[in-house]
Length: 357
Ligand SMILES: *Cc1c(COP(=O)(O)O)cnc(C)c1O
Image (cartoon, rainbow, N blue to C red; front, side):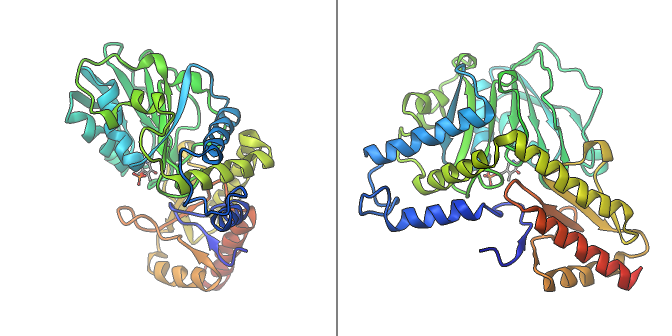
């Protein structure tokens, strides 16, 4: 089905299987004679989709009973506000590792004393700050586990003396996660688990209800827990595609299996960047993301940037332009990006180097 090598950062490549199943459900959903976007979200058939989707999340990420999984509108950006509304009483600390982290912090600043505990802004967010100490007198500590724009990642579950909150938009389901360590994990679906239009929130129930402010109904996680993510009409089609994406992941062997594949894909690409004289990686080696691989032309070869872009495009590479704030190249190699696409990009880099180096 795929005709190009899709390295888009999000929305991005999804499994063929999920797309095909979604097309089928648009034609006739579960034998109802209606498209999945035509049935009532209160129907038995739709209820089964919600249940299956939740069950897949629970099974794949091993989510304990202490946590609820929610599917919400508004994207990860709306979650920035949800976080502050539901968890910020007085004070919160953020790890400032990029533009998304800054946006999350901005929402919290509007509601309380929120600050950056550590930042890598001094070097264009090319590394993850270390050596900071999480204070014990804050309501929560917020991290962005994968920095989509800069290609850095925190690939382990940190220990925090206060409730830990993570934006995992761009690396959720890429590796096993110890959910019990987090008060909240959230993100937009459109990088690793589905199309745009739905966000996920895995929230520890007993961490809620600790703030004294009035929380507007729609911004209160408890509303959506009580409503089973259907307090209002949920984004039905994105949820359906998400369910199919997770089914594909389960068929592949789950997050342990995809983690191995992801590590291999990243190794293939970083090895080429490190050995090819034309290119150099931009993220600190120890913090390199296995989801977003950022690189630029090596010193002396900067003028070849546009030429390589066209060269790669002619060979079927899509979406390798770096984010406008950093330039260069970025290959997003999420779960659904096949190893063949990574190999094709590497072949393309080798071919270009043979001509130019
Ligand atoms: C893409 C992204 C977001 C923004 O997601 P929206 O759903 O567009 O609001 C937030 N955080 C991270 C880490 C992202 O990669």
